[in-house]
Length: 439
Image (cartoon, rainbow, N blue to C red; front, side, top):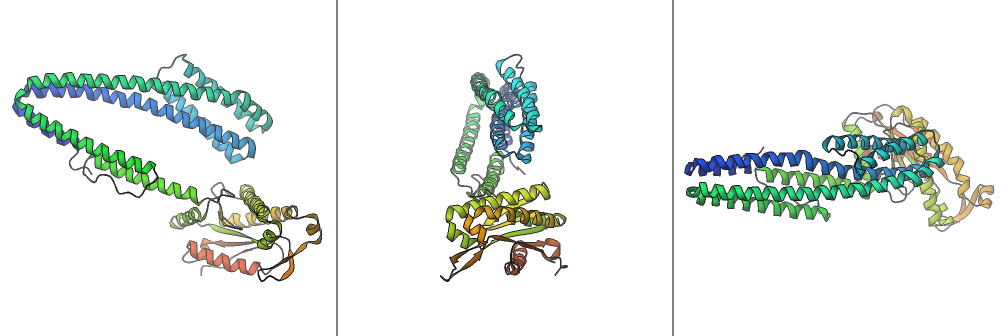
């Protein structure tokens, strides 16, 4: 809570000025009221309008990125995300039209044209006409989008120039009001100067510190304490900046945590998702998948072939979850040849079965014709002893949170490790679900 906001302190100072000259106070309040109304209009219309234009630019860039990915991957989830972005575009267009009467201006024409093109592209995507959709994107949708981005940039620059003129006009009005008020309140000029100097110094110091904090945040320093710790608007703004920095740090950590090969979430995201589901009391199944004999494969065929296998397995895990899982399921890559899926207990067995089926079908394609026909190959083990190694197989261990009295990421990991150790002693690909009661 703000105990002594800066506005109240300034108002108290001007209340003292009113003791010297009532006429000066009346005029000053009238001028301040007029400027406040103008400032409110700027915030309600101009700043909101520029914010909407920036949101539209970001939306268009996001649409372009999702569209390219969708035309390559043909992923249903990407299609849903693209449709959501297109709906957001329509909503932003409506809000922009409500704030600014564009009429038949080029920007409004471009917005309408892109909206119509989005509808035509959506129809092509809904009917899975991928080649037609790609052609339409190259010849129509992408040029329209690029043209609209240029128009938005021009519109934003013109609005910024107009806003700059308005601010200069406000500044000129403030100076005229100040000169007249100074004449009327000559007796209180000394106190008014002190109040003005204090307020200007206070605002300057606050803005300077907040600017430095913003620059530090932009440079990647998110752990700095709040730039101000005062019980006023600037102190609250500094605390909000600090909170935003912590959120940006979390997002940065999650981005760095993602596996660079499969781009799947890593240990940090997996652990947080487990803890969230445990905290909310949502039962879940942890499906751990591990490749058998992967090191021997890597030694024989090389690092690049091993990386290709890991990437392919990551895609197979995603496909199994897409086919048999839930929309909110998490697919993660712990590292190396270990993968994890967080799903609901009732979907765990279907996901594990589908994954093993597709994996076993894909395994022969990883090997040379000679090794594939023999069903094994000769290589040295970790003790530098030559022996035969079977083709790659997969062990999948499933542990549900309801099977443990006190579930935690560490406890679930230990139980999965025990099951995987047992499965690795068996031939071929296998999965095992821990169906024991709470223990």
